[in-house]
Image 1 (cartoon, rainbow over the protein chains, first blue to last red):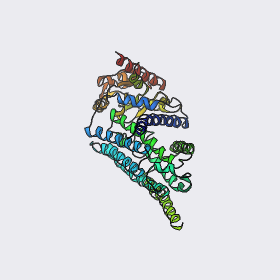
Image 2 (cartoon, rainbow over the protein chains, first blue to last red; image 1 turned 30 degrees about the vertical axis):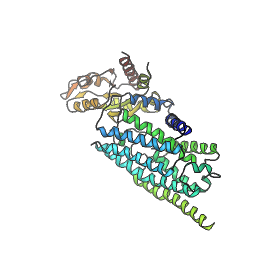
Image 3 (cartoon, rainbow over the protein chains, first blue to last red; image 1 turned 45 degrees about the vertical axis):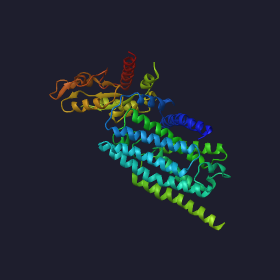
Image 4 (tube, one colour; image 1 turned 45 degrees about the horizontal axis):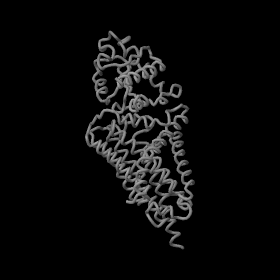
Length: 288
Length: 143
């Protein structure tokens, strides 16, 4: 690894959580404003993180902390690979295994609430993971390479020909950002469903690490949205910001749905759109 | 004030336990979460999980039937933590004080840091009590 890459990795390791935490703060503030409340300060997620780091460790199973670290490490790896312009397929798969770590950590304690939450978390992954994989395939078909960097060598924006895939990614983003109507593993607003769903048995430091991993994940996903309009870069940035605000709006105007609706929505509508897009791209290539 | 102490004071997560209360105080606690009082502007979140909570709000007197649940919840909260007794019943037993199943205020069962009197305690009083609890948390940490 040369010097520039090293600097880039360092920038990602430090800059991404700062950006992610800030975005989470904006999220909470905006949500409060949409509900007619004043809301917490923008820096609230950082206070929460610091406080959780400072709590006494209370361990119900040592494996939970290990899996929480695994979740953070894999999400971090995926984020770094993404920002280094590496293989998109590898990024999606590593991110998927990271998500599984969260559920496995919840399974490693004998708590029925954590188990139910973990079941639902796996169900959510089952819903969004194929969409993300198909997105990587669609980008491959368009650019001829799975490398993230190849998107930047492409003339014009991907969204012109990949807009159905982009719509599918928006659906996956709702699940991955843990937003209503698909926040079934642990409801983010009430903080009380199934005690706390998949997070029930995580506390103190392990919960703080999970929160940190969520920040990395958020920026990574917005990065994925950015790829759809990578040139010019400001259009991609606008697209990412627009998607972020759209998710917050959807979160606040929609009630939560059951898991069947989520699976139906992502598998039939989401995957349907992405697959139709891929078939169409291949058709064009065959004709030309 | 150190950064960690500041973070602790800025991000108190509540756990609410109803120990044989008449539900009057519980409704006032829920009123604190509505847009009118909006305690989230102080970083306060209402948690359903003792393992994530910093402040335990208890309404109603301690009774022989479920005092063990209260002790269990208290034990499950990681340190540092504070306990607020909300309402006259939680403070002393209140109107229930001489019932056959009542042990008295919840300080008979777990250590209490702040007492909020009132029947029912008003939302303003509950917020005041939580602020006092935070001061206590800060004072304890600086000693």
